[in-house]
Image (tube, rainbow, N blue to C red; front, side, top):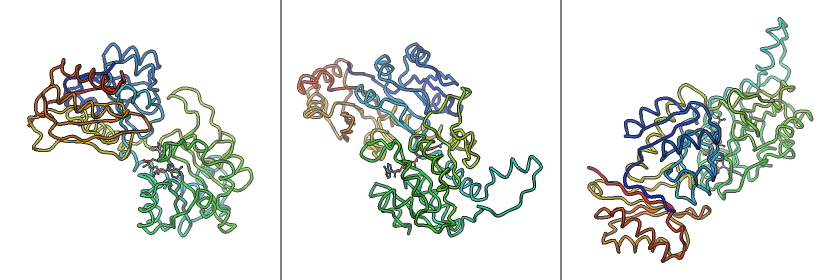
Length: 439
Ligand SMILES: NC(=O)c1ccc[n+]([C@@H]2O[C@H](COP(=O)([O-])OP(=O)(O)OC[C@H]3O[C@@H](n4cnc5c(N)ncnc54)[C@H](O)[C@@H]3O)[C@@H](O)[C@H]2O)c1
């Protein structure tokens, strides 16, 4: 059944403890906020979502948003991730029910970049291994496998938001930047910056003294990057570099991009000298027991997914997601939507004040968009302007129309029924929201 709401979103559930300033920012936008500071289990989340009739769920990367949850919460219109990674959300289930999913692709980038830079230098000088030895009262002064980063080749795998910033910082520290990204636009940016583009991941691995991984969970075609940095690829690191290359590997991207046993094998084989890892195939909830896959390997520096865990990043994320969701709530504007990360849709300008905005998530089946337009017309309203985007891989489209008069709730339900009739798809319309735009 289509989800229908006449007005802005007013009820939010916040879980997994994003920065507390978020609640105030949402309250200022007229939202009632229910916060669970921990990462609730499935049953608890479902109970709270139903009790509060939540229209939006704010969460970080742990708590799963399953098809069961989406279907059991008919008031839900949006999931707002307070992080980048979206693999905890069943996006197809959300799309099937007209629930839009947003993330924050930029606010924690700087914190990750600084941790990468710290690792490049710390691993080059073996700081993680030297400190515990000194604490034991051992004076072991040597230059064995200790390097400067100046003049070395940094291979950046994934030249998106974070990869690009890492490359710039490394360049400022005297490194030479080599990169690989499968997106044409990213490659163009890298080349424009004067960086050296590799043609394949293998080529990047072979031609780099250091490799730092900043791939997203999937590529631009939606194909998963799981295990993309295979054992064979790890074994190529520094192959075309001088014998005394530092051969250092850093993954602060996602845990499933490489397997711990493959990295350990490359270290055992003497191919990779040092590594730093912040992300793992299996990550526990805070406080849960965890087996560190590198516990017996001092040459791997291990951190518990703290790339973005800084005093600065978390309030920044709170501000950005409050704005993203606020705009979606008040005027249907879409940015940072994970269905198509670089898409922006909005229709608000001076001339649209005092008008009505209709936001419809509907199926991409042929004829559905036409059916929405016809239904608006049949309801006696005029469509003054509209924007539309298909998210083909998820079979959902989002449609924003400025109309000259509000539809009654009955007319909205007629629109839903008409679109279903004309398109011969009972689920043609997934969700509808109508908002009055105020001056
Ligand atoms: N450790 C942490 O705490 C932390 C914090 C923030 C982000 N991250 C992770 O860092 C990664 C990078 O984040 P971002 O904001 O730069 O993402 P982004 O989407 O801006 O960049 C990812 C880049 O990877 C490229 N890419 C994807 N698949 C590819 C493939 N198979 N081959 C070549 N290129 C490919 C994309 O084209 C894109 O340019 C993400 O996985 C994110 O989840 C980790």
